[in-house]
Image (cartoon, rainbow, N blue to C red; front, side):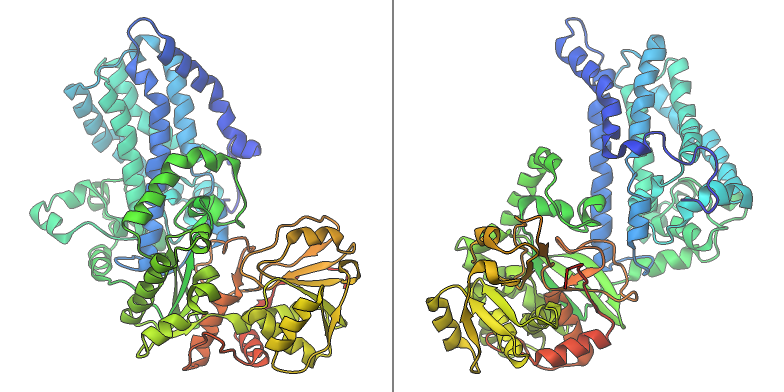
Length: 618
């Protein structure tokens, strides 16, 4: 939002939210009926309107994914500052511009049938005319209009919305108030209507020009440089005809230079080229990949979780992961990703952060939860081993194992890798101690008894040992569980058999019968100690998040949610690796090894991480 929003700031369909696409429905239905049933010669250009809109959406999404991936890697990155949720929310309507051009295109066919119908596929004179009109009137008028937008009157009412994004990403290009976009559409319509009225228009000139605008917009805002220096050496004049990502990035950091649309020639003519343009370009090109200090290794949960990654759909990644019905229609892309993961499967960088001078990266194993649970341990372990060795080579000090990457049945909480590679300098952390500490500190101080459900694993045993020191009684449902728990705990503990209806605090993990929730007393609190949340079957009970904490405000580039956790919340297993590096602990956490949970809890709090509060009756 601009600092002092002017008239026509809001988009007319903003109140509709995602239902704004319904406004295109009449056009879409009419197009499909015409293109399927037309008995005479079909108007190819008209039939291509809808496919072109979809292709532009896909094209923009590819730019978003590639840009975020390259920015996470660090290679040729221009600006180091990170994205935040406020920017993601501000730019979440990036598809509005494409929808607007769709409405305008359909209206043009309805209002101007004489000149818009039955366009040929190609006319060289029309393509040349579009190129000349763009390089001349469009670029010239845009340059001066852009400079006018930087006058305080228009800037405060409109253009400041766009410049709120210092660090750009491809969708920043179309993050403007509605009135400003209307002005841009009017400019870009000059070549289009000129070719229509001179009857030189073609499918290539109309749709090619739209693609050119999208391509150059995305290119200029992608925050990584990729134009090879050799290209400008071979064609020196090119620097006047095509801007680079670093050229436009300077406009977002300096504000009063590099005003041109796509062709810098007008900045050179009117003396507004930034003095550091060449230096910034060369510095960005030379920038190597980041060397992470801490790597968090996670994996995909479901086939649709690919769209919730930071590299996926920004609007989904910036909110807790939930099932979305419309993702089912993405099955061709989902299947393609799954196939690619199987053929070229290797971990990839999904996110980068900085905190307390540490460079942090999240890497993703391209496997889903079901694949971990269905006997594919050999292939999964190979991918994890390769990731550990790659992190070691990249100079990382710590690697934390997230989700099922540290499953006991898979690799013994990372023990498999430590034994196989005893000379590892990187410290492998399973995060169990901090997960246990978070659960223990989530239990109300007045609690005298907790009901333990699920597998008795490393985390639950650490929790049980800690609770006995607080004189909290552990309850189970049958004698077999009591015997098994007694045999695995370090100290003598107070165990009891109880009925589900008597328990108010439930500690739940993997492998428990979730239907037991239905027998819980009203107002019971379910606190998971596993990586995955339980299914919420009761509206009259309370459910904690999986072990997690809120990241400090100094934790940068936080623009996506970690799986099902709320904004700025991080899982215990990820935090554990960061704290391990900050404290300089030179030991692994694997196998049966656990740390003092009081010590790791206080260390985590000392570094600014805060408990994730939940409203409960206690």
